[in-house]
Image 1 (spheres, rainbow, N blue to C red):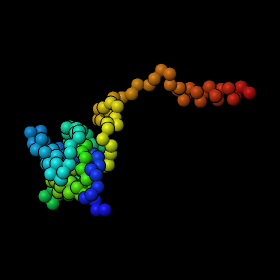
Image 2 (spheres, rainbow, N blue to C red):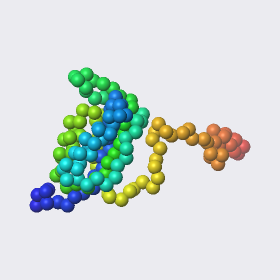
Image 3 (cartoon, helix red, strand yellow):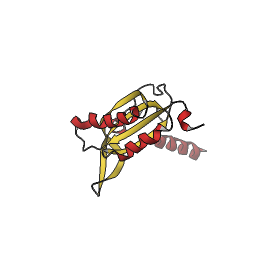
Length: 150
């Protein structure tokens, strides 16, 4: 059985587009990724529009023979169904896409697996200490006091 005879599977691609791409050109960049999926027989299931985020760590990309470091990027994702052999062609398009900083393609399920939207690391707020939390320093002192009384 060749891979062309296999049934379509569900994949998701997460990508970072370079922050130097203007907001006005962002749709065109996403369309190139979308076209890579549909031209290879893929069925788009769902997608998340890219938004500018702070990256967890600096990433580099060589542009015009010069190594550039980026700390921000437009993060977006697409979920699609396609035959396994088509993933190679999609990966090739993403690898050759000049404005894609980095991407990952994974096999997944059609159903949504996230109950609610999670905040991005740059959107997390400082957590306040819960009044019910144990103060470890105070606890250690109380234990030391009890042990020394014996």
